Length: 375
Length: 160
Image: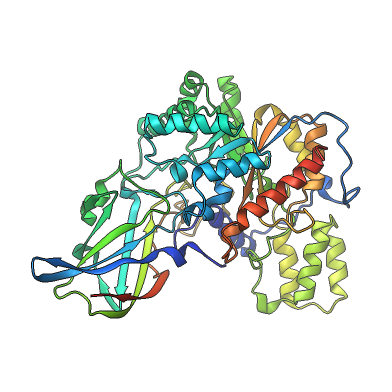
């Protein structure tokens, strides 16, 4: 570990470690994502979509870090592209977090009015080891979560996104507080997790036994990813030197197009593969790609989704995640949720352009507008 | 994997020697965190500073954040103060005589103790792959790397 890893990088690393381990199971395809898209230009949905477009300002973190754009500038940009439902990591962008001044909060609501925005989802981080060697007690943990529920309420957010590791007992004890502050909480369902992951089942148990409408899940679109992002190397696969560039590209393209693993394996066997090529196929098929119908089946638990992406191409497709196959299923299934577009490709690429992230989010919203039948 | 924040951690602005009366007592530079959330000060787990190959232990420096100056012992207890994402903090290093005017190569390592991933998963609830060897269910997350890698490097001119 060569620096402060993000959670996502950690998950990727662990995915890589697991992929290389002896415990590898056979790759699992996703029936709904198999097979080609009906068309490159999607048809208008047959039902009125209940999906609402938004953005997490996390997407613009590089521009903010370099002070190329201010928080207001990012809100103005979100408004300009119709990403009206705002997700924020308050600790990342709110001065004085967790106790911003009343003046800031007034300013925040003025911005919401000025740019026609809705404070939608507050992204919470539970720092369970605030002091070295000392885990927070249950009550201290609840107090930390209440701090965020209070600030969410103060800034007008109606939803709070919990990370995968936020302790279950803390969240369960905080349910009455979520009700008190009128803030729904949702755990992120993040790759390589899926609906069968034990902790996810545990979450549903908690929701059901508390009979609460204030707790659910936030699916992260990484669960629909068919191949690693470009610029992320082979993402837990074999060393590059043991692979053939053209075969790696072929595998990724076929996988993205929905071709089953055994068909791809038979194809590459005829292409004079190196040992790493087969390992790469195993690695990218290692984790179950979630069928979007499973999200539909759990739609009562879903109010916000992380519409994650790493690279929008110039023709408005996501390189790894086949949105054209996912969004129509969610629309037709009646999923009623906001979507927080989360651009994460800035982590994998050296970027000199201060507004690269802005262009990527704009492209993502062109794609979403097409899929929602807005254009 | 390309990483970008590291290129912005060491700031050229304000790089200077520090005087006390007529004596040069050390030098100063500004740094930014490479962590996307910013951090509570108590979660700054480790910092390494190397100038022209010479390492300066944190016992011999202070860090000033939002106008408040801390020793590293004080930092570990500052659970209610934060270092905001993108804001420079000032390191003041004790070094009698300071640095010579001219170019210096500065290297920096920084590790925040982030703990929102479970460090232990004895029941295997989380999708992080098999528990590490040893059977304690440790996920391996949140451990301070040892030695801490120097992730940022910049050569900059100290002006007298």
